[in-house]
Image 1: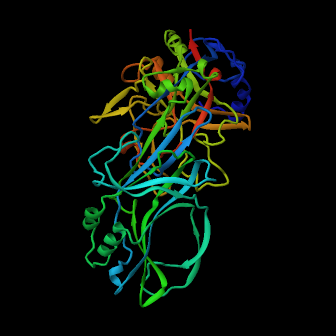
Image 2: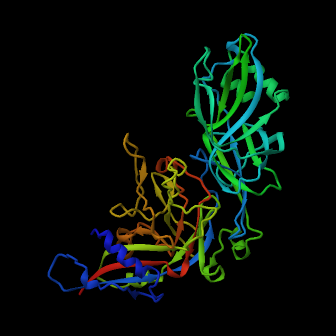
Amino acid sequence: MNWPTKALRRWSACLLSAPALLMATGCEDPNNISVELPGSASTTTEYRDLPVMAYTVRRDSLPTLNASQMLLGRVRDNNTGIVTAARVYTNLQVTTDPLPATFAGAQLDSVTLIMAYTRAYGTTAQPGRFNVFGLQQKLDERVAYNSSTSASVGTPLLSNVTIPYSPERRERQPSSPSSTTDTVTTVATVPQALNFRIAKSASFSTGLFALLQKTDFTQAQLDAYVAGLAVAPADDYVGAVASINPSYTILAFYYHDPARPSIRRVYRMASNVNNDARYFTQITPDFSAAGPLAAVADKKQSVPAAVTNEVTYIQDGVGLATKLVIPGLEELRKQSGISINRAELLVPVKPFSNSVFPYPGYQSLNNPTRDAAVTKTYLYEANNENNRILQRTILSNPINRLVQADQANQQSQSYQGASNSSPAAGSQAEGTLYSVDASTLYYSILMTSYTQAYLLNQLGGELPSAFLFSPTLALPKAYQPTVNVSLNRAVLDANNIKLRVYFSNRQ
C-alpha cells in the first residue's frame, strides 16, 4: 500500500533516535495505520525497527569500460587515509573532419590531447603532473576491461608533464573550424579541460601528420601507427582526480592551409565517436595509510563500525560498501502468518562529511549538466562469511543478485529498454537520498515485496546472510546499458541504520 509522504516526514524524528534493540517497537502508534486484509480472522498490526550490524567492506573489478565518465589523477581522502590513483586507456578513432590532404601543402601548427572534465575530486589550485603513453596494442573487444585491469603501454610520449586545470571559458572562433571555406567568427564556450601539448616536431606528431596528408587515410592506418593512448598521474603527484568526458577526449592536429593562413583548421581523433569506441579507467586505491580500513585491501575482510568511530563507508570507484547483517529478518521468518505491509531500509548519513566527495545520489540544482549521471545506491544479497555477492543464472548468464524494486519479480532481473521519452532502467531497487535539513540526510530503499519473499523463502536460491549497500551497479551489459563511474562517497551513521517493517499477523 502507498504511504503519504507527510507520514514519512513524521517518522524522520524516529529515524535517528530509535533504540538499537532487536525487534524494537517504533515511536508511531501502529493502530493509526489502516490495514485492509481479506477474511474475517482477527489480525494484529504493528511495526518494528530491525536493528542492523554494519561493517565496511570493499568490492573490486568494478565496471568502467565505455562508462559515461573516465577518471584521471590521484587524490588523498583525508577522512579515511585512502589514496586513489586513476588512469585512462583509450582507443583512437578517425572522424569526418576534412583531412589535411584536402589542402595542398598543409602545415602543422600544433598537436594537443584535449581531455574535457566535468568535475574534479580534490584540489585543482595546483597543476597536475601526468605521463602520456601510446598503447602497444588496440583495446580488444573480446576483453572485459574493468577497474582492476590494465593494458600494455610503450615508451612515454610525455613524461612528468605539468598540466594546469583550465577553467571553463568563452572564446572567439570560427563557427565551423573544420570547414573548407571561410566562416563567420562566433563566440563559443570552451569546457574546462586538461590540455596535453605534444611537440609538433616530435616524431610521433610528424609521422602521424604525414599520414593525414594522404587522401586514403583510414582507421586501419591509424591503428597501425598508434594503437591508442594511456594517460596516468605521475608517480609522486597527489592532488585531484578529474572526471573526464569521453565524448570530449580528442587528439587534435591543428594546421593551416597556406592559401588561407588566417583560418585555423583541425583534424580530430576521438575516444568516443561511434560504435567502435573502447576506453576504460583503471582505479588503484592505496590503503597503506588507511588505519582500520587498511584491512579492506583484502576484499574478504570486514571492518566493524566499532573500530571506525561508529561509522561505515560507501564509495564508488574505490569499491567501498557497507555490509548489513539483520538478525531480526530471520527471527521474523520463524513466525507464521505474517503479511508485510511496508518495509523500508533507512540509512542515515553522517552530516557535513562530503567536502571533497559528493554523496552518491546527490544532484546539484546549480549544475545539472555536471551531475547528469548521478551515482545511485543499491542493495546486493551476500554471504556474511566472505562478503561474496550471491548470483543467479538467467539465460545461461550469471548475474549478481540485487534486491528488486517493489512489485518486481524478486527471483529475476529485468530490463526495460529506452524509449524516446525516458532512459533505460533495470528492475533493481534504488536508494533515494532524502534531506530533512542540512544536518539530517538519509538513504531510503523500499523492500516491501522483497521482505515478504524473504519470509516465504521465495527468493529462488540461497537465503542471503548479509546485504551489501553499494553505490556501484555491476550487471551484464544487457541489464546495464549505461555505466557510471565516480568517486562519490558517503559516511554512514552505522548505529542508526535500521530496517523498519510494518506487518500484520493473522491469528
